[in-house]
Structure formats: structure tokens, C-alpha cells
Image (cartoon, rainbow, N blue to C red; front, side, top):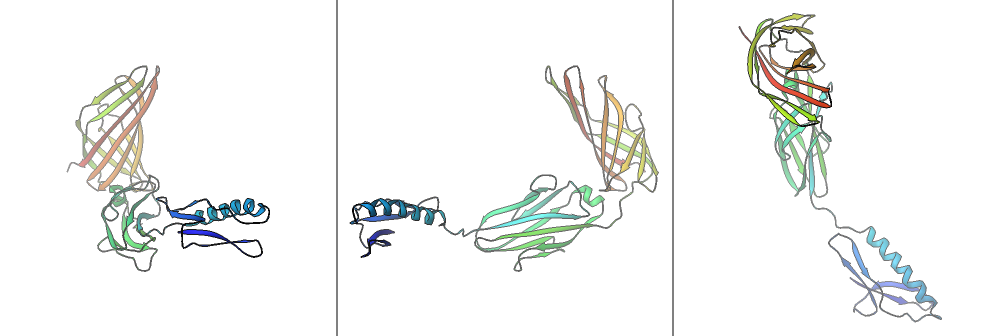
Length: 305
């Protein structure tokens, strides 16, 4: 667009659109969606040159202010998914397909999945897989809340339907509520399948030692209405492991041990998938003689009977 300054009889100037590119201010749309101007090339007839010195900076400021508030409206929208747990749990992985799609991790900021740059229209996403620990803790999908009246959820299908308009962001929350009943593992003999692990040491020199897979067997003793499990005979050193149930219906415990002669405290975490199956992991970190070593391994437990 072309603009010019027209001087009025009273000596003041008026900014108006120009029909011809003569004595003009030129306003152009740039790639950054802001207006860019080219300064006046004209010389204004004014009283003693005073008006020329006033008009040019005045209209420079005027056009800059106009340009800073001008932008092209975004013609795309955004769909956002989140998972809400009641009562809240601090971690968990959930798999979604559709739009948006991917893995949502509660412990990782921002704790949502988003699909941006969407053209106006309908989109949907489906909760394909719940976190194993969440299932074990008795959480179930009970509601899908969307902050847009044209968008909705279907709990039976585990699906959120987004209606996206230009410049609009729609949020849908998948609400999981715990039934209050935790799964209690069976008392008696259990088998353990230790998956391959590793010990990574850093410091004076770096070294990674693989931990070979192994199998073993032991027994569970259930105490305190399944809030405590005494596991014995599962490790190579026959150490007794005392596991305590946490708020997510999983179990945590520690035991003193050693690896290659290095004393350490090993942390265990169990996720109870059924009364006959448990998924677990162990982790330990120790610093000695300028070296820091971290040991980690996943394992599986299954009821022997």
C-alpha cells in the first residue's frame, strides 16, 4: 500500500492512501507478517522547514506503532491431549494414536501431547495403551473432558474427537480414576528371570560391564494385608528383600549387596501386572576411589504354581 502526507491549510499534515507512487510512504507486507515502510521521499512545503523536521519523525513513529500491532491471522489450530489421574500419580507412560499421536509421559514436562498447524476440521486421538503400573493400581478411564463445546470424548472407545477452527487450541483430558483396590501377589514360590543389564563406571577411566541374564527361584510371604512382601531366595546371595507397597500399588525396597567386590545398596521397584506376574527393575550407584559406578537391570517375576 502507498501512503502520502497531505498538508492542510492550517500547516498540519494528514496521512492518506496515495493513488500514485509520488511523494509517498510505502507500506509492504513482509515474510514476518509485519508491515515495513519506506520513508518519505518528498519535501513538504511548510513554514520555515519546521514542519519537515516534525512530520518525518512523527510519521516514522506512527507507522512503526501500526506495524508492531499488525499481523496475519493464523489460519491453523492445535489439538492438545493430557492424562489426569485421580488420585495423582507422579509417573506413567501412555500411548496415543491418531492426532495427536505418540507416547505421553506424566513425569516429563509439559506432560501433554500436541498436534500443531492443523487445518480447520475434525480430528481424533485414541488412548491405545495404559501404563502397566496404572493398571495394577486399579486406574480406569472414566471421563474425557474437552474445553471446547464442539469437541467431545467417547470413554468406551477411549477416543477424543477434536473440532479445530482457525486460530483455536482445543484441550482434551483423559481422566483415570483408581478403584481403590490394589492387586495382591500370591504367596508362595516365585521364579525370577533377570534380563541383561549393565554396570557403567566413569571417573579415572570409563568402563561398561555387561550383566549376563540369569534365572532363579524364591518365595513370597505376604504381611500386613499385602502392604509388605518378604521375598527370599531370589538373589544369588540369598539376601532377603522386604518390599513395601506405595501409593501407585507398586512395591519398593532396598537391600545391601555387592557387584565385583564393590559394596552397594540396591533399590528395587516392582510393578504388579497381575497376582501371578510382576515386572521389576533394580538400580544402584556407588562412588569409590574416584570412580562412580551405576548398575541397572530389568527382571520378571512369575508365580511358580
